[in-house]
Image (cartoon, rainbow, N blue to C red; front, side, top):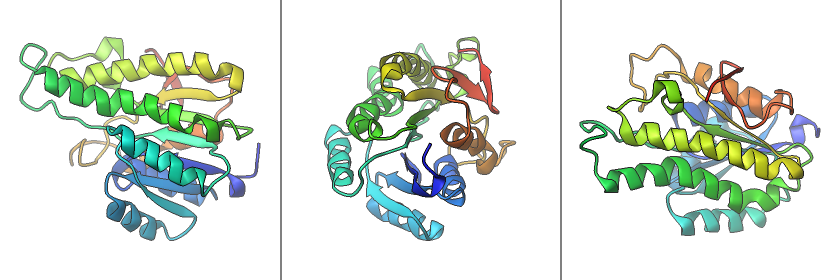
Length: 233
C-alpha cells in the first residue's frame, strides 16, 4: 500500500455532516481529499475549513452530466483514486408511508441514494484501477437491513436496501480488479438528516468509513458494517 501521504480519497456530499467528518478524519491521516457538493461554493467553503490537501468539486450524483463532468475534470488533475466514498444521499419520507408514497418520490430517492453510487463507481473506475489499494465505501443505513425495514420510511429504506445489494454486486464485479467494496451504517448521527437528538456525533458516525478507507483488512469486501463489525444485510 502507498503511504498515506500519497493516498487520495473522493467523498460525495462532503461539505457537511458525516461526509465532512470523514473528510476531516482522512485529512488528519495525511490523505489528499476531494470534497464534492452540489454547490461548488459549499465545496470550497468546506475545503477552506480543512485548510490543506483538499480539492473542491461540484458534483450532483443525481445528474449524469454532473458526474461525467466531475470525472472529466479530475482526470485532468489526478492520476489515480485510492478511495471512493459514496456518502451523498437524501431522506425525504416525511408524511408518507409505503401505501401513500408517489412513484416520483420513489424515483427521486432511488436515483440519489442508489443509482448515484453505482454511477460514481462506473465513472471513476478508470482512476480506481490505477491504485494498488482501491477501496469503495457506500454509506448505507440500518434502515437498509432486511430486519429493520420500515413501512413508514419507504423510499429511504428501499434505496438503502438496494444500495446494500449493489455493494454485493460491485464487490463481485470488482474482485478481479483487486478493488474492495463495502457498505456501512454510521448509526443515528446528529446531522441535518439525523436531527439534534441523535446519540452519535458526526465524528463517531464517520469512524467506520474512515477505518474501511484506511486500515480495514482487504479480505473484508462485499460486506455491511457498523462500528467496525460486519452485520447482517
